[in-house]
Length: 76
Image (cartoon, rainbow, N blue to C red; front, top):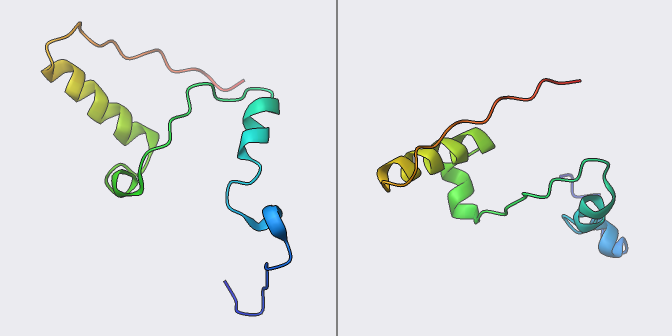
């Protein structure tokens, strides 16, 4: 970001994630299954697909119930 941008007086509006809680509470289809992962893991798992694949593999190796992939939703 350019040096000439000064957010010192912006208060909470300039803070990263300042409105996320409001979004979760008021968005029409707010994600109820949101999980925050630590920064070191986000470097390894760059997107939801990578996280899901790793968790499915872990579940299979754990000897639990077979994991069935959910049907993909179609965009409406």
